[in-house]
Each structure stands twice: as structure tokens, then as C-alpha cells.
Image (tube, rainbow, N blue to C red; front, side, top):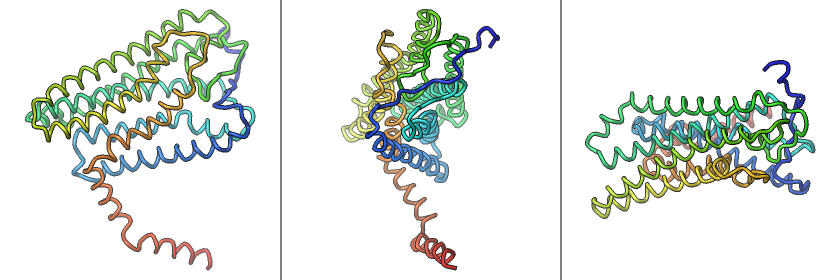
Length: 324
């Protein structure tokens, strides 16, 4: 930035989730538990997919990448939010605020495109089963993942460009638990109407186009499934219902926040919590932990690294070293 464009504001103050001091310890415990669950659940899925050769298929390759992105979605702001629950004044530096803006749009933009890729994978598997392995080759899967990260990077770079040169010289209170464009741009010491429109156009286009592609994909799949036997239709419906649930839970808050017309009201904190914390928890449960193949692979992984008596032996060794 030029010297004239340097912000006078060196830090922002988060208002957080609640002003109640009595509620802070409870929220600290709940969100710490949820964040730990996100990390353990998604890391377990990545380890399971990478360690079991039977899961080295396009669908599980994409699922492992989804788990990796979910860890990023949950980690860009949640640790900071959890630590802020233990302090009175919740501050963040200007550069760290920009970093949060960068990562939230990088991970969410990448996840939107990856969910579209996963819908395409299911379309090929159900509608063109004989050509599945030819169409969804390893090379194609890598390209799909690369495109998701590329789109996320382009999206977040364009979003950050709207903010980095804005002059901030007055208010610095952000009515949320992390920095995001709709709230941060309101604090600029200039008219941000055009910037707000560009933000809506950018994020709204990515959200709505991805969501519409998903709707079309799943509609075609459901129509195709109706022509199969009742048993296969029931299984496919169960899988598709789970996928559509994840898509709705993820895109719903994003579309509401970035496509809904800007007003003087703050972004709904419940929606922000939902897509940064609850969606990364629901993705592993809905996509993989309900899957019999994944459960079998996890059992195999458990038997390999946690053999009977191994845990108790480790505990005995630790106790022996402590008493030595």
C-alpha cells in the first residue's frame, strides 16, 4: 500500500459471540470440544483413506481432500475465537485480520468447487457406470482438486483486493468473532457502496453458480436413479440425500450472507458459526462415517495400530517411567 493509503487503525476489536461473562467459560468448553472433534474426525478420515488401498478410488480421494479443506475452514478463525473467550478485550491486528479474510475465502471457495466435483463424480458413477474409471481417472481427479484450489485462490485474491487499500481511520469494532468483508468494509472511512456491490457480485456469483450446478447435477442423478431397481434406487437415494444435506447446510449460510442485499444489520453470528464449525463436523459424519467401507477401513486401522493389550502396555510403561 502507498503511504497515503496506510490505515490509521492498527487493530480491530471483536465483539464476539456473547457479551455475557458468565457464558464465556461454557462457550469455551463447547467450542473447544467441537474444534477437537473436527480435527480428530477429519484427520482420521484422511489417515483411513490414505492407508487403505481399497479406498484409493476417486470418490474417497475427493472426500479426503474435503476433510483437509474442512480442517482449514474450522482453523482459520476458531482457535482465535476460543482463546478470545478467556480474555476481556478481543483484538486482532490489521494484518491478521486480512489473513483471516484471505483464508476464509480460500477455503470456502475451494470447498464450493470441490463439492461440485464430488457431485460430478456421483453423476458419472450412477449415470455412466461402465465408463466411470475411464472418465474419473487419477489424472482427472488431481485436475479437479487443483481447479478447486485455483478457483479458491482467485476468488480470495479478488476479495482481498477490495479491502487492502481501503482507508480505516475511525471505528474498529467488528460485530463478530472473525474478520469478514461485509463487516470490515463497513468500518472504512469512505463510501463503500461500490465495493459492497463488487463483493456481492464476486461471492454471490461463485456461491450461486456452484449451488445451481449442484442442483442440476443431483436432479439429473435422481431422474436417472428412478429407472433402476428399487434396491439400487433406495441406496442411491440414501447417498444423495446425505450429499444434498451437506450442500444445503454449507451453501445456505454462505448464500444468505453474500447474496442477501447489504443492510445496516450485522451478519447473523449463528450462520457464521454454522459454516465455520458445524459444517466441518457434519461433513465427515454424513459423507464417510455412515459408509460401511469407511467403517471397515477404520476398524482395520484400529486393529493395526491399537492391537489388544497395546494401549495398556503403553500406559504401564508410562507409569513405570514416572515411578522410576
